[in-house]
Length: 194
Image (cartoon, rainbow, N blue to C red; front, side, top):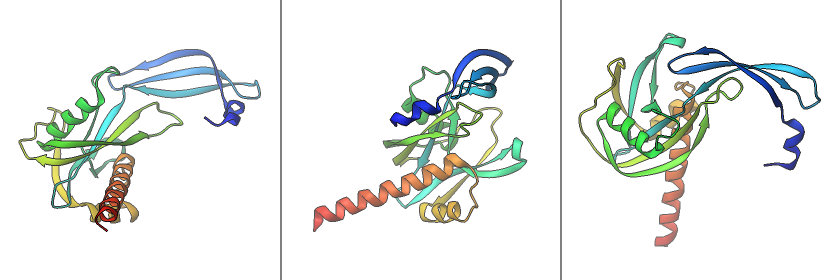
């Protein structure tokens, strides 16, 4: 933490649950700003989620196409899902979502990083993973989950992200992080062989 960050900190005074939904929980908090003036914050609490970049040996990625109601469009995304509880093991959740949405299991799972989807209004944290050494199987999405599988070369996904064709933030982050991790891994391997 930067020592100057303390001058930016807001202090909670009171918190009221406004809406308690199945997925999100809306709160209205009274706070004090860094200068001591009162203000309010409306925000959503979420249990958290995981997302997986499933990379096949041929360089393609197992993605899903899914209708997203708030935006009224079908998006290309990586497999993802919410945690069953805050205490759920994130690695196990990632393996579950990979299996449910793609039917795949993996021999290698690498943590990529943490993604805050909309930090001004939502406390959702999405842990991102790269899945390799994939074995294919039968997908089993949730009953209310209608998805279409699609395999896209990783290089093409990077181009799609950079061209603005993939608006989903978790997919953007995982694709770019995963691609960079693989590039660095390849660079280290080539340095060892020189």
